[in-house]
Length: 213
Image 1 (cartoon, rainbow, N blue to C red):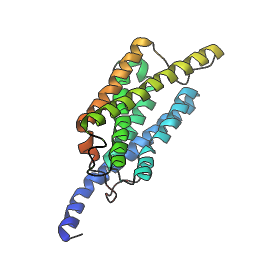
Image 2: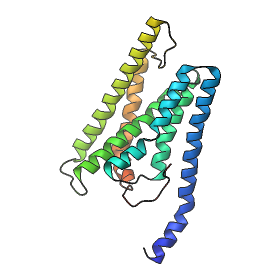
Image 3: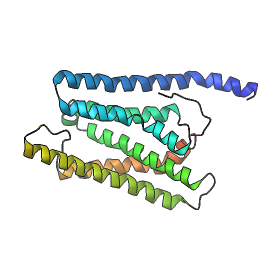
Image 4: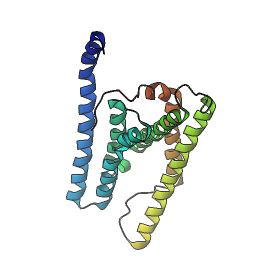
C-alpha cells in the first residue's frame, strides 16, 4: 500500500468508524427491546428479540461462506432490519400503519441482497453468462418472494396453533390483505436490490476493512 492509499484510508476511517458505532448502537437497541420483553414477561417480544439478535450474524455467515468482506453499512442495514422488527413487536406493528411496510422493505432488501451476493460469488468475477441481468433479476425476485411466502405461512401456522392451544402467539397474522401487502413490500426490497444492489454489493471484497461486530 502506498502513501496515497494510506492517506485515503485514514481520511475514510472516521466515516467507517461512525457506521460501525451506529451498528453497535442498533444491536444494543435489540438488547434493550429484549430486556423490555423480559420485564413485561412477554414471550412474543423475547423470542423475536433473540431471533433478531441471531439474525445480525448474517453478514459474518455470508463472509465465511463466500470469502468476502462486507462493508460496515451492509452490517448496519441487517441490524437495522432486525431492530425494526423487534421494536414492532413492542407495539408499533399495531399502532403505526407504515411500520410493517418498513419492516418488510428492509428485510426484503436483506434477503435480496444476500441472494445477489450469492449469485455474484457463485458465478465468479467477470462471468456474466451464469447470471445475466434477466436471470439475476428473476432469481432475486423469486427467492425473495418464496421466502416472503414462507414467512407469511409461518405466521399463519404459529398464530393458528397458538389460538388452538390458548397461548400467546409468537407471530401475529393479520389476514389476507395484510399478507398481500407484506409480499408487495418484500418485492419492493427485491426491486431496490435488482436496480442498485450489484453496484452496492460490488464494494465487498476479501480485503476491505470494516466493523467485525
